[in-house]
Length: 112
Length: 112
Image 1 (cartoon, rainbow over the protein chains, first blue to last red):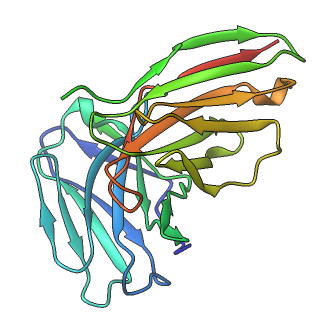
Image 2: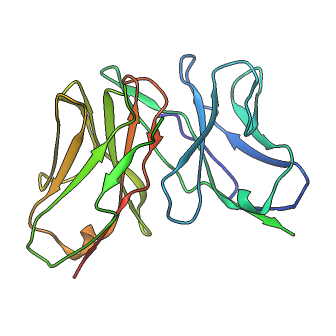
Image 3: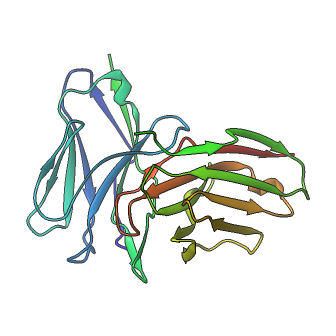
């Protein structure tokens, strides 16, 4: 499994952009980077994923460095509902199957 | 399109009993994965099924088992429950075994 490293916690003001970093220096060439978030004991919610290029969807943007050793999830206009634990994951492949290995994630708090 | 559904949502059992949890994937999804979440260990992968076959298994004792039916619905069973089995059990489905996984709301199991 590609190991990912995230800050334990972050704060962001409501309405500002929240930038969540993730280091994945051991990621291999064919491993995607996925981001999920979990809001207080609910099921994790898929946010976005990418391989090499930057990606954007209705929830967030994902910026991946050229060497693919790190990435940043950007929530452009954070709201109180974005308070959650955010997980950066590089899924491992085993016999063609994919399993998600969750670390401790980043606890993001959006402050009014 | 309806999301992943899990039943029951809450369950209380006593030590030594067994329990069966159910997961209905998103329509058209053929892969189902199960995860256990506890405060101490975080989110851990249990097993993954694709086309009624277990393709991947996490590091859990044999008391934890699962199966998948021809309509892709899945069940997991825990026999001889222990206090440490108290957890949030999450099911995730994906189109195929290397596709994005989408999580259900989970079943919260309390073992007394």
